[in-house]
Amino acid sequence: MDSKKLTLLMSAVREGSLRKAAKECGCTQSAVTQAMDSLEAELGFKVINRSHKGVTLTRAGELMYPLLVRLDEGFTELKNIASSIAADMSSPIRLGVASSVAQTWLVPALEAYKKNHEDSSFEIMVGSDSLSDWLRDGKADLVIGTKEQAGSFRWFPLMDEPCALVLPESFRTFKKSLTAAELSAVPILMAPRDVLDDEVAAQLNLLCCDDDTTLVSLVAQDQGAAIVPRSALRGAPAGVQVLEFDPPATRTIGLALPNSPRVEASYFADYLCDNMPYVDQKEETPEEKAMRASIRRALGGTSNRSWQSPVFK
Image 1 (spheres, rainbow, N blue to C red):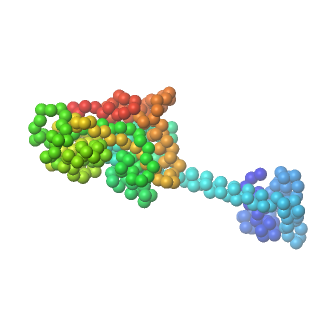
Image 2 (image 1 turned 135 degrees about the vertical axis):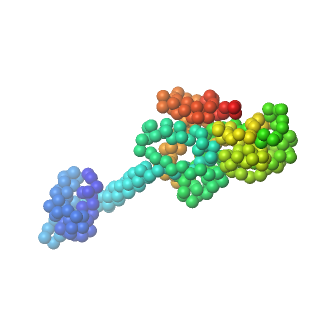
Image 3 (image 1 turned 135 degrees about the horizontal axis):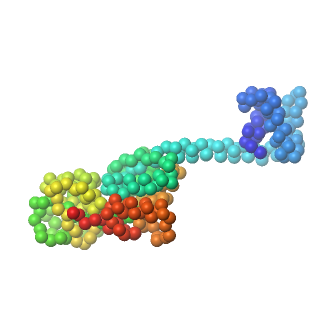
């Protein structure tokens, strides 16, 4: 039993005429007659009485009609949902990402995903504190950043990013690491605000800047120091020196989805959650191993669970 026969039946009963049903549905009267004959053959009994006075339901038809109406409504809903999903999957996934993510592992992650999802496409927007606003306003289908940047939306951890202390060359020290107390007089420009606990942060003269590239550039111009993810220091400009912060600082990157995510965005979110370092150890497919290896190469690390970014050279 297909939806076309049910549509023609609904129209014939509603109009009380096969001719009017044919006109309403854009087909010939003989096509409607054949469809009704086929439907009744499938059911095993007559559904409608056909006469020169028009169309009426038989006694059996009256018993079946409410069920057939619900079935027709179900077919209509199925078509609408299928059309919506098809349109959703043909549209680019709009990603809002933190700058260090965009500059490092995002591209190999997208390339690995698209090997098995060739029809997928992406639009990438780079931001920081605007990530949760993009989700709220429907401008992004999925965002990747810190839990703080995700705001109140559902957030799933993906990876740890070790952070480093970036200082201008004018800052003289022979140490390889510095504490908050030793930096208390230095303006600290810090993008990942969640990398330090409150007690340590209280000892620092913190300013607010949300872009890692801008932070490093300001440090090079002798405007202060910065605590940034090591992944953001690849290709850092001249005029800066990189030390460890004591105690070590690490930020966690994750993804956030809106309350009613697009199907294609959910697929990509599931893929990242299944393949990024926070996933439990499991037997990997060759494609998953290749993805993990390509992302590690982008960051210069080797660990399976937390990113060990390269020492600055």
